[in-house]
Image 1 (cartoon, chains in turn brown, purple):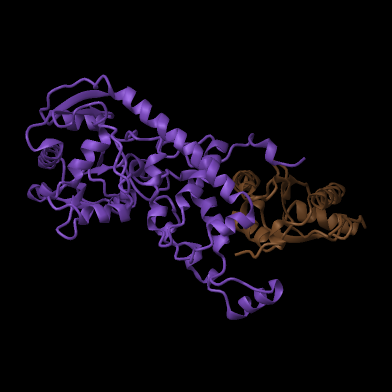
Image 2 (cartoon, rainbow over the protein chains, first blue to last red; image 1 turned 120 degrees about the vertical axis):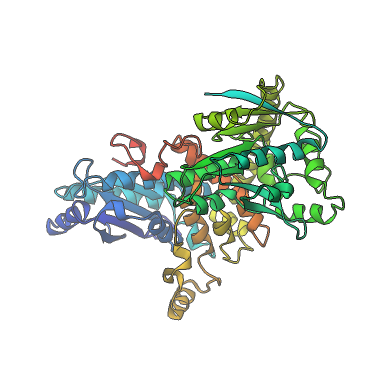
Length: 142
Length: 379
């Protein structure tokens, strides 16, 4: 599959208060960002269980984005800090099994950062296109 | 805090002396019961047994090479609520460390408990123990094992200690109140005891024991053994990373897994009260399997094998003490201990966490700091 043919699928867990609102703003501002990203709105990144991320990868996601409020801005005070520890945990585990660390991304995108959201999705899609499709697509995953 | 005592061993050997020691503990007013590995009258099986009458301690085998399950889980059942009396429990170093993790997770308590741990020369896996026990005509297996294993002798082929024990870096009972020192001594003549906490000191002082110095050879023996185990451990890490470094390889490593979840049941630190893999969440509707088969062309049944193992790693990796009970419990002999230990090592280094080190040290996924791990946040 050539670089140009490959359209990655990216699962994004975005928090209701910041990154989802930013994605909304990107839309209402008519910013164009790649269609590869599938948004899953969660109330807080602190509720993103590591197994959601694992499941997404095992179902063939080429990348997973977890994105919430900037430190100090969490609607639930500290959910984003908990998310950071969980992403740290996953980044210790998943690369051992061939998932490149670049496929899992954690970002903070504030509600007014529609531009930033579009930018990050662009960047991620381009990075994942360079990496190529996930091994899961080729494996009989079990 | 540390104070040394000793037990003079008479005929009957270390096994007899330690039984007497446990009986003396049980006879103390403040002790209601002793939890110790004890040989059952059936097939030579050794299990943790809660003993409240001294005459039942005759079959106690605190140094038995049997390790049928983790005593940490057993002791958590005894301490999760007030039991109505103080218990002295004899555990292996890895069981103590797992128990400390359970205390942190509020599934066990150190109240009303005295932890007694011996220097550990390792244990047999269940299949080796069963074979050895069946061949043990004179009932002297524990003594023969002890004499060979603590002296550092090569154990006969087919009767080596379990893979987890051969790579263990924690062969002394760090979190114990009372340490039974067996490295660097001739345990058929003398056993060294150390009170490592105030509780342990109060216990031993109340027993009218002679004072004793740490055997001079002990620390050297420990260093030597840990060094050798570390070498084997690093080799195991390397081999396991090679064997699982890719999804295809991981699937191959786990190929004979039948989703029995035994490794979860045997794991002392797999802490969920109800495992999600045993709930309706994974009781998929038949249609779901059809959908998966349609989408992927085929779906292995039972499904979710790799998902289960990766999720389990995310749960237990930080607290894994490397006891090896997962491998012991696997019906298809998948070397799951090697895999879980290798992953756990990376996670524990990443969080600078050592399970069982200190009961005041919170598990890494239970806390956070505002200023940390900037490197995992992309922009």
